[in-house]
Amino acid sequence: VDPETYKRLSLSPGDIIVEKSGGGEKQLVGRAVLFNGEEPSITSNFLARCRPSPNANPAFLNYLLLAIYNARGTFPHLKQSTGIQNLDLGSLLDVRVRMPPLETQLRIARFLDEKTTQIDRLIEKKRALRDRLGEKLQTHITRAVTKGLDPAASMKPSGIDWLGDIPAHWEVLPLKRKILHIEQGWSPSADERVASEDEWGVLKSGCVNGGVYDDRSHKTLPSLLEPRPYLEVLPGDILMCRASGSLKYIGSVALVAETRPRLMFSDKTYRLTLSRHSIEKRFFVYSMASKHLREQIILSVSGAEGLANNIAQSSVGRYIHSFPPMKEQDQIANYLDRISSWTDEVVSSVSMSIARLYEYRAALITSAVTGRLAELQ
Image 1: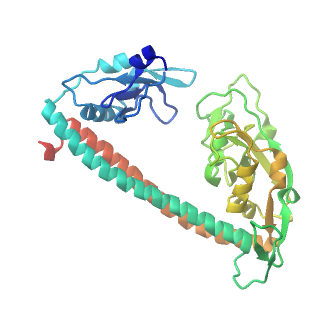
Image 2: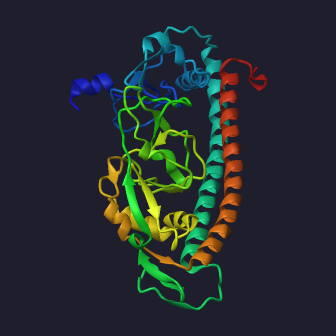
Image 3: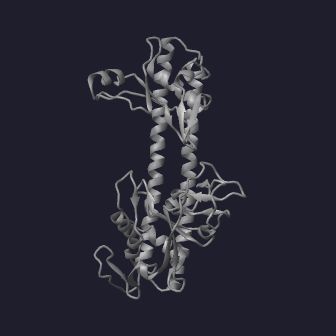
């Protein structure tokens, strides 16, 4: 960075960084953070550096901006083009606010630093619990779809090091022996909104994230474009995320239990047609979430993290897995349905608890910076 640019954009401890471009469907632009770093840093063109005046404590001012943001106070100052929200920072900074004396600002900031740190630590513990529940579920899935449910079953070497021993009556095959057909969808330029009942929509690649189908994750097909009904998603379909910016989600597979009509899958998604006489759909979906198949998926990805990660159809067919007879596949799927249902309930409870902590955190900040908190009077 040349000296003139660095002088103009460099950050110092106590500066406030405001997001002036970005946001999305579910998140407003305009979030502010306090910079406390010691390393030489500058802002990008999506950010603005705000340097507090001498009569404003930086931490208090940051909490005040956060309270405004949490109350959607940046919304009246937004301009949007091409799906990107832009914040009119000058307009936002014209908003009049009540500022307490500097000494009171410092006292409020210290109080909020202590309280929000406690809340954030609790949130992190609950997030860690949620992650452990997910890991434990994958362990159950991996064991069930590679070793079966009978601990006394006779075992045999699978012939594959990473798979180890499998039940003696199981077979090891590439997925192409179980998949009859793989289709790729269509990704026209679509409107960033949910389609009405009489409109067609195009599903996003994230519609199967985490192995759960979400028909709300779609865009609206413009009325000038003709839909392709043969790509409509129907109950019973199996969808797979073919391309994603995150390795965490690429290769996610979900069974469509139910869906709204007039939704097409995109070219970042595969629809898999299975051999119904040799593979149970739920067993297949659970198997695709197992540790061994996830590792094969990641190894077959082309592209770089954060860019266009892709899985080729030929790669899907080459993945290796162990398969029991159909009756046993159904028993394993029923068992994993019960385990998954219990895990989903606990994860949902933990997620609700995290959401409530965020709400409490936001309410505490707002009450403190607006002088409505009795213990700060």
